Length: 100
Image 1 (cartoon, rainbow, N blue to C red):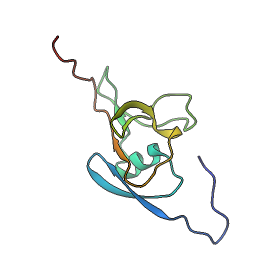
Image 2 (image 1 turned 45 degrees about the horizontal axis):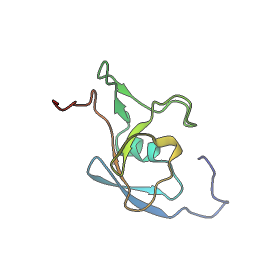
Image 3 (image 1 turned 90 degrees about the vertical axis):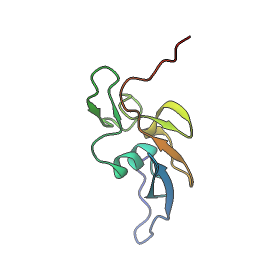
Image 4 (image 1 turned 180 degrees about the horizontal axis):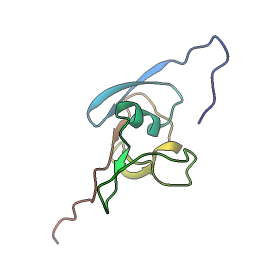
């Protein structure tokens, strides 16, 4: 996920949506990086305490980068490469469980 383009070559910027806001991010970047670029305060809130959480390892081991991507919840954003038009939502604490 941290491959740099050759010297003198610029990455193309692509548009993704993070929590309803458009973010321009270099092609080949991770969804976790897009979420952090949109707001450096964190990628999610802990369901237990509400504390802000942010990516730690950026290689899929710690699960601190869980995001909702294109409507699919709890994906590891550090392992998913952004693509144009992607929609990313940062979880904000405990999920609502509908009454049965």
